Image (cartoon, rainbow, N blue to C red; front, side, top):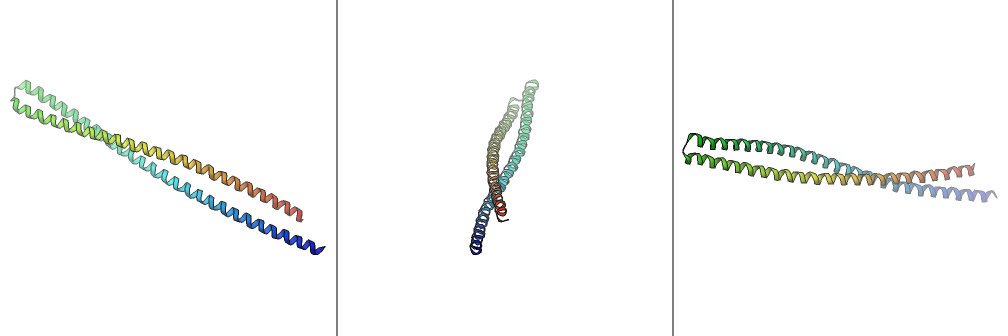
Length: 179
């Protein structure tokens, strides 16, 4: 009878060892999954930070271009005022039409150049706005993926905690049976 109990005890101990080994393997797999999720989370965070940095740089560039546009518009107003003064002066003083016409032509060329620059700056601003919009969509997508990864990680951790609690309860039952 004692021999039979000894054999049963050995079988039970071997079974528990196998159970512990199986649990250890499962937990190792879960730790690998958790490490992968953490790595992906870190990569997504780095990508989001980089996108935010680029968005900030684009906003700075837009501010610079807006300032250039304001300067160009001020220059346009100044050149237009000069043109108007030149035309008024031509009529009031009676200067040679050929001389003043040459100055008028130059002023108009400057106005055309400034307007072309203004148009180029407006196109650059529109392009930068498009890039910032693209960056904002990338940041939004990265945040969405980050939230999904976090939810997936939390679910895996809850499952791990539940399994660990079940195994702890089983060990307590076994300890009660042994004692």
